[in-house]
Amino acid sequence: MKIVKHSGNIVDYDPTKLKHSLLKSGASQLTASAILNTIEKEIYEGISTKQIYKMAFGLLKKVSSSHAARYNLKEAIRLLGPAGFFFEKYIARLFSSEKHETKINLILQGKCVSHEIDVLIKKNNVIAMIECKFHLGKDANSDVKVPMYILSRFNDLKENRHIIFETNDVISKCWIVTNNRFTTDAIDFAKCSSLNLLSWNYPENNNLKTKNDSSHLYPVTCLTTLSLAEKDKLLVLDVILVRELINNSERLEQIGLNTNRIKNVLKEASELCEYI
Image 1 (cartoon, rainbow, N blue to C red):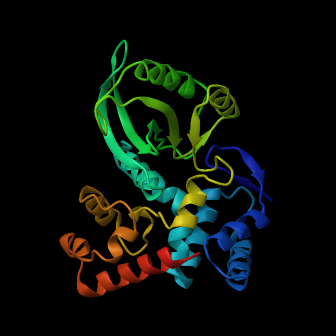
Image 2: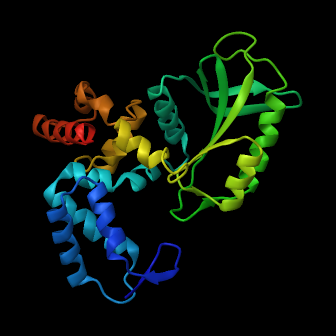
């Protein structure tokens, strides 16, 4: 059976891939098989992957909100847009969880021109700049032009000393982070130029997906018990990660949730962050 991807490409339906994604959400083998059987009774030639995803998400949510939230991770990261400012905060939180000091949105003077830097991190006296490339489109990739351009900015900045965490700081490393994917040429160029990349699926064992699963760094936009408007309100209040809500229920009161809704949100948040 042929299905249509977001990009418009037509591919074969792969039940193994769908079942794997259901299991990764935390669903049991029994639940994943039952959902797969239900979906296979309803799909048809030419159905879109978006429709299949919506069916799977809806069926998962009936079983467990936290499973559905985890299954929704990639879309949840995309909801940190549209401008990408909250995505930059989210990336800073990820590096902070790995014991980096972080600063966001600083303007620094390079040897030739000034540059606005999304995130700066420091660990073991090593300072790195992070440039975030946020894509609203689900199939947009960061191609080789991205690391080529950012390398030129990095080269300009590393020539100067800056006031970042202390005076006379030197930037010696550079990261490029995207919510989608890098093309093969972009990865090859970055490797050759000693640039660090982080994307949804790269590096293979330490990417945005695996960092979330291993360290419970889910964005609040994952939560299925909140509306889009409520998620936006939390982001404005600088609540970026789900785990920031668990011992901070007053934030949910601030956005107008009643006691029962707060209880449901905290239940989902706790289950999501306890999953291993």
